[in-house]
Image 1 (cartoon, rainbow, N blue to C red):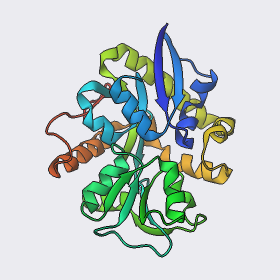
Image 2 (tube, rainbow, N blue to C red):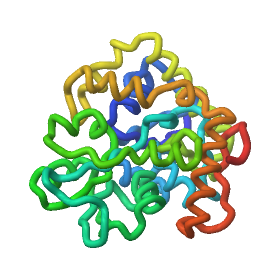
Image 3 (spheres, rainbow, N blue to C red):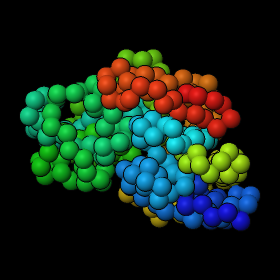
Image 4 (cartoon, helix red, strand yellow):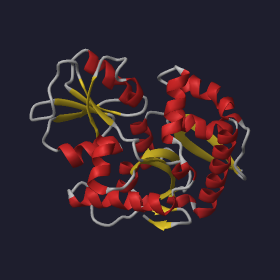
Length: 280
């Protein structure tokens, strides 16, 4: 048995997708999986540093380390209407010079979208995603690029909706937004990557057939405990492209890389490779 260090986020879409692997309902052939549930930027940093063998990472982070990683066909968060939202403090200011803007990590796709569409529109700072709402509510920041449950709970938090950055991306490119996916360190080899891919796909199929059975795992790790919010999260971020990226997913990844390179935010070259599907 080969032991793999696997990182995922505590968000409902990830705990839903990995529930059967976390609980032993599904097992990976020839692999022993040690899971760590971490903040998205921690996942990005630890996979890049080699502290994890595989992880759910932002596609921005994956593009930065494309030569070292393989993206699995299953497990991605990608689609239309799935992007981060730009929220404001009550009575706060619009994007512009001098605005204090919070984002959930330097290598998150959320931060990349801000830099693509709002470079120069504020002073960007990075904090853990769960700290953004409290900072906006206390007016310690003007704007926040919010991910995960923030799309569903900003009204209850008394915040102001400014922009859907996913919709901005869609209007600019016509492509679905690739937020993040499961990446494996290339040095482990394709055999190990395929074993993890097969297990993840089986776990996803198990979850889709037995949705309610996944609730205890989702509840145990979520920031927002209301079941309707958990299911809204799963229904939005777990879709057919989660089961298999396919040609549309690869094209979306290529579009994100091209946009970042055109703005000088990503070095030339270094296309991501999707396991069994080729470069994106």
